[in-house]
Length: 290
Length: 313
Image (cartoon, rainbow over all chains, first blue to last red; front, side, top):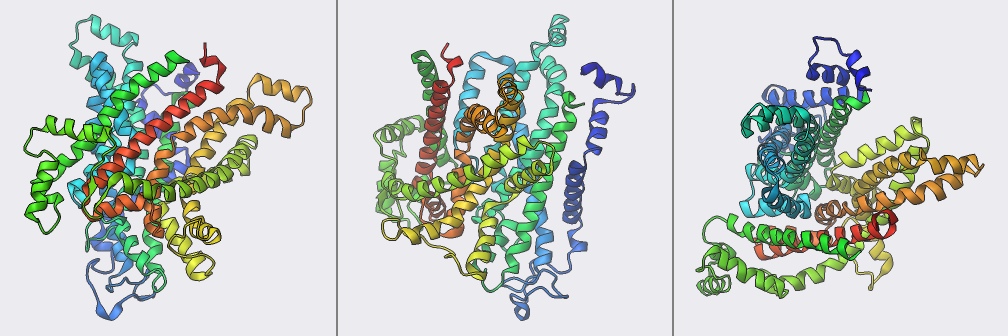
């Protein structure tokens, strides 16, 4: 299998390019990538794309059904739902990316330490990881957000910390598998210092599964941010966020059902796209599936 | 068996200890004087003084932790400032509602997830397989509070078949109880069905390619018997142990689902506590949840050990 994979690999292709070319051949992953890119584009270009100011209230347009003037209708304060959905992408994407960056910046060094140093360091880190994993992700995030105080920044910190143990475990497991390889032994034999072996020889081999996990973790973080905002622990009003929009929409479900549809559809489509992309990356980065 | 259990229990004790430190540590995140924050908005001096004495706030952190842990070990999770009740009493009061909701959700998840996983594995690569995978992806990507709102829109607002919110005790009116819980249970079961479907599919694919299944087919057994009796029985072991890990998803989901449908359960307890700044309740719920999760995983491991003769050695 391995030689087969090498045969199809042109001499001047890096592993990254090889994986990317394999990703391009997966239609579902490409759909995911295009949709994610579209959401990122909308979030960045929100001031130019959104037809109205997302926080501008209008007493003459309260809870108006979708029309040519307001394609997604208006909310309980007369704000344009479409504009709020577009601006809401900012909170969701920001929360998704930043919280996963927090998890990565904590999880990789700690996991590397546990896997490389071993012994009691590993024992302590593993037990703390177990303790965090024993607390359901969202409940831990709710508790952290509750004690830190409600805001988007604190929600991102809470989600990031709650998702960290998964990254510690993953990094640790990869390091344990890689550190017994011959080339690591060789690097040690020629006298490389430990930090250099850990960073230059072990870390690069840990990256592929971390990329896959990060993509899937962004999907989970987007749902988590929406959940915390839905509970009032994330983005604070009047700033738009899909979760807090749904929280308000729930109170007007009989009078203004359109308020509840689009923020939810947006969460669903964005999360689905990250999941499709993550599944595609997993297959593309797996050399066994050449 | 005894060495396996001893070893397993030996890892649980430090884990529980770290859980307790984590939960105790949450309190340290509160900005400023914990007694002032916990006393609520009126800052009644007598309440502040009472709290300061009860929480030993004048002592150093490790001493306070030992006092707190001592209380927890005696079953004292503190007191709800808002309800003026012990946290353990509140948990005991709300838990049965969530257990009923969670049990109904599991039944729904099993009823959807396992058949879908079997169909998807048996008809691998066909339209059935793709359809089952699409349903699983839908289940994993739908935020369950939104699904709840959409179901309310359809079944309560448009069709008027089911109540939009509220809860009726099964001892009062079983019919009304089931009517109030069927939508939330479906919402909660939906996400778990997706995970079960994926586990069932991969476990079945593995079992279906094994020698004894080929032998069973070679004997001329009916395909139905091969799949349901020979393959499924062995595939169920990993499905059940992996399924036990979904307990966390179930509880996290219950928090949101109970909020959407206004069900007075365990999840609503933590959300209400968060809004009322009733921090002892938040801590108590987290501690209880983590302990329950650890106990459930232990039970799953023991069950796995008992049904798998190879592990007995």
